Image (tube, rainbow, N blue to C red; front, top):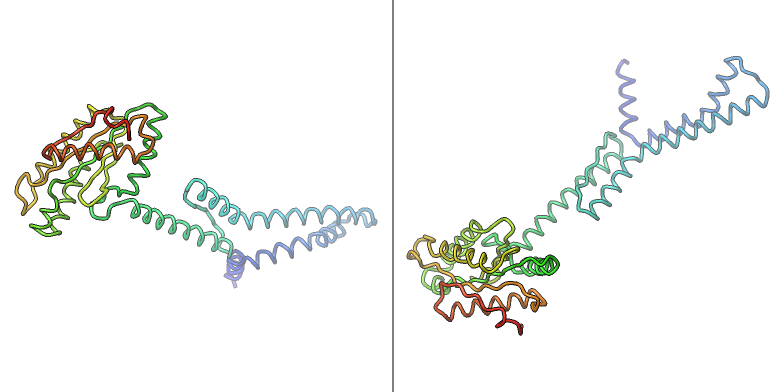
Length: 296
């Protein structure tokens, strides 16, 4: 019998219908209880006094009922607010729900579901923007981020450079040693690129053996130094069964300018510089003069 009050309290906490029933039952009977208490307490039995007691107790019961219902649905308001923030800002959906009734269960379930969906969305976004072999950004992300970076450069007036480079005679590696070795060469090149860039630089693989590096806040002199460091490090890669120095790259370099109305034109200018590097013997860096690219 001692457990009965605790069991009753747990049942009320865990059942929304029971909570509403108890609230409504008490609120409805507040006027009756108030009149009984008034009479038993020796209060006046005139019609006016009874009506006054009924009026006050009815208002009190109604206010108590509304306040109790407001507290019951509080988790739903929190959930709605959190979902609105998630849609606008991407903020995590977190709800501190202490109730164990149906509303609390639904709120917690929705919160967990949105968290799982957010994790899945971030994973899918990462996969959509990343080259699966090298882990670098893919062409799609480079084009999107490059367009944003070019716009930022125009607003700020800061310089920005773009590097495009190919691994030299890469088809020969695939033909002579197989695609597995070719893939290992691409992965080794990506690791070398990643370890030689600054935090704000963005590297990507935009084709079979073609790579791209965005260098924000960087002038041509600084970009040439970065390109030379990359060229030297790539040339020093040791990867069996390739001979030392077999992995080399040709680099094209260009700096942002007003006549590059789109990032695609910026890439075209850099690609022209890459073509010149290949023409002049490969494993080198070529920077096309700005006036030679003004028609792009």
